[in-house]
Image 1 (cartoon, rainbow, N blue to C red):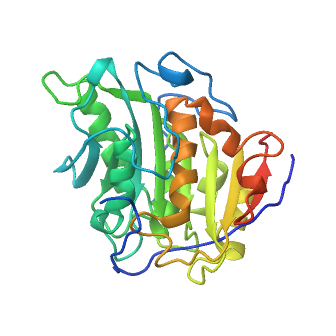
Image 2 (cartoon, one colour):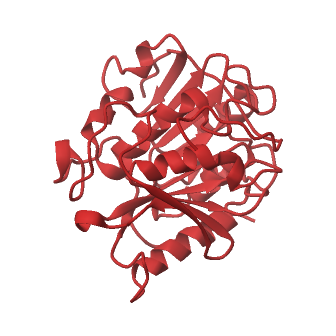
Image 3 (cartoon, rainbow, N blue to C red):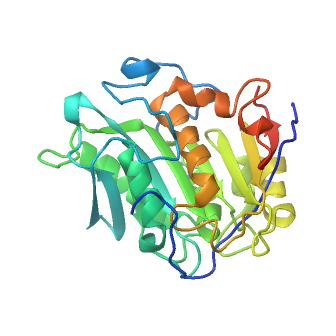
Length: 304
């Protein structure tokens, strides 16, 4: 195990304040499916080493992507942010399932969910302010993967069911770790996860199925890193990149477009779910890009 320091922050949400700096606007049982990925993702076909048929490369992970997007209420109380139309040029879109913070809803996080949709992901958020168990998030995964195989569905054969990510903020960040026990989830990115109750079970931290980008806020007093993210890093059974963003708080930095977290989180999912080799250097290698960024403090576990 190799540990490298750069910069770390922590944030959690327990408010419904709506703001955005984006360019625009009981536990979860393990399930059968795709085994979790390790530290690296093999490249596929497509553009610039990006998996699939024709996912465009991007120069700035924090900037809006090239896809037009739409937002829909569908499934078992889910809100979907997705490319519109789906499946152009034979694309199969990876999935990111999202868990809201306490007292929050998908509208609070619409900027980042729309951002991910603009990069080609199907981002689906559970319509609950109590996402800590991960159960409602799992129901949204069930829905979109079932639609992929349903004749006549807009999703039919347009979902990359082998590449599903989980993310969420605060209580929802804890829920994303709970959902990480589902073998269909191949990468996670908990944002300032709160893990001291609210449905979260610490045992889930050592039952993950894919690499984790654990994000903390340096000025987070609601889900402080020492009490909330340190145990996750210590207990995780998968490769973990733990980054703390200097000056990031829990309420403003972790909602809307999620500020300085947006670019790295997008890069993480583009690499692990989309096979975008240009995003690898943000987290892997010596030194990695975030490891030398003065705004970030980094610890890495089983990541080279």
